[in-house]
Image (tube, rainbow, N blue to C red; front, side):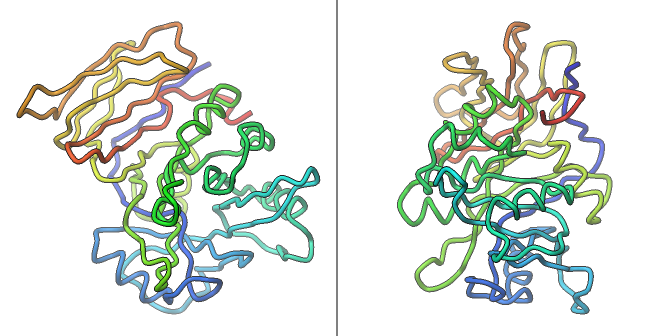
Length: 297
């Protein structure tokens, strides 16, 4: 059974799910990162240093935003394909000595959320992306876009959706904030949750009750039968996107903007999501509007 994914009765909270600190190869401390991101309106960040399972609850420092736990794993699988996987959750007994695939399995066994990181930048094939049933993929990675323009992974997301229609899409910074990688605050998610707590945020992310953005905002997402209604910050175009070439769109007239749109979702589409684009070409994406009741399979 397919269920409408979005419940926007809570509050919107802005956050980033891919951040590096001095604990691995980042250039800033947790305190510096928190101050920088809080000043830009962020409510939460995930600690996702390479092979460092974080434990934010044991950190006695006070921060101007909420820190949540994660880890980034990297390595080759048994077939030789190289991966980076961003994992959200609190984990134990993870080390480089165990190897990439055993670590991936250990994270999954601890109920981690597994997100395929920057597959375009990695040179992953579409079959690589579909091989391990990842919970999500980074549809946009800001630091990879800065490094060589390979931050967009939309083609991977849609390839994954054809096999796993619950696959979530994330826009992230992957911020390192070093002299050679200064990019940050270029991709984020906005979660709708009843409160700003670790449990509420991770539950909402797991349910896909968030959107990803490089700039524009969704301010309301609702459904009436098969008609989806969205309220957005001023944008130039709203697209309803399905597999392959299937799409519908509403475009603003010359000198005008859109702030509210409704579109009917065709019954025959196996999945549909909404993309909005502002006058500067910056985009934002919902997750697929419907999810399978049984979750990711």
